[in-house]
Length: 296
Ligand code: A3P
Image (cartoon, rainbow, N blue to C red; front, side, top):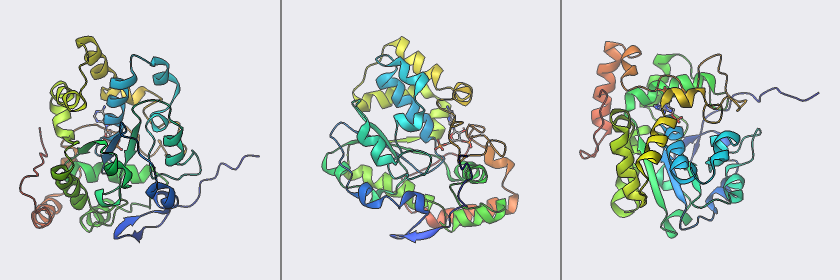
C-alpha cells in the first residue's frame, strides 16, 4: 500500500545567516549552480506577498493565447517552478526549471537577494519582485504555516508575530528581504518592484507598468482576459492555481487562497501588538524610500 504519511514538520536552522528549513537547502549545490538563460524571468517574493498571483499573471501574459491547454492541465507550481524547493511530492525546482521548453522560462524564488544563484545576474535576467506590507504579510504567513506541513509549527498568533519580528521565519526577516531587493534595483536595472497593495488598488494600472517593463503590448482583449482570469475568486476555484493538488497543505485548516485583501491584519493585531510592532518597524526599516501602505 502507498505510504501517504507526511514527514514530520521541519525545524528552522541558520543557513548562511538566514533561517531556513531543509526543503529549501537540500538541493543547494544544484540551486547555486543553476544556469539561467538571458530571457528567463525571475519572480522573487517574500513568502505570502502574492507570488502565485503574479506568477499566474505572467503565465497568462506570455502563454495565455499561444498555449491555452497549459492553463487547464498543468498546475501553476509546475509552470512556474519554485527554484530552491526540494519536496518529496514533486520534482525539485531546478529539475522542473531545466525541463521547461517554453520561452521565456518563468522561475519563482523566495530567496533573499544575496542567496540568488549568480547566473541570473551574469545573464542579466529580468526580475519581477512583489512586496506586501509587513502586517498583512505576517497574517497571511501565519495562516499558511498552520496549513502547510512543510514549514515549522507556527504556534499561536502572538508567538508567531514575535518570531516574525525577530526574523526567525523561513526565508529570514521580511525587513531584510524587501529592503535587499529594493536596493538591488538600484544596481540591477532589469528589476521591476511591485507592491501587492497597488495591485489590489488598480490591477489595470500595474499590468500596464509590468508590460512596459517586459516590452509587451497586449491587446485590450488580452489584458481583459488576464485581469479576469487572475481575479481572487477565479484563482481560488481554479484547481490549477489554488494548490489543492499539493498534498503538503491541509485545506481543512485554511485555504491557500485565503482572503486576498489589504487590511486583514486589523482582525489579528491587538492594540498593544500593533504599537509594539510599529515601534519595532521604525527601528528595522532603514530605507526611507521604501514605503508600504497597510490600507488602500
Ligand atoms: P491571504 O492569506 O492574505 O489571503 P503567495 O502566493 O505569495 O503565497 O501569497 C498568497 C497570498 O496572496 C494569500 O493572501 C492569497 O490569498 C493572496 N492572493 C493569491 N491570489 C490572489 C489574487 N488573485 N488576488 C488577491 N490576492 C491573492
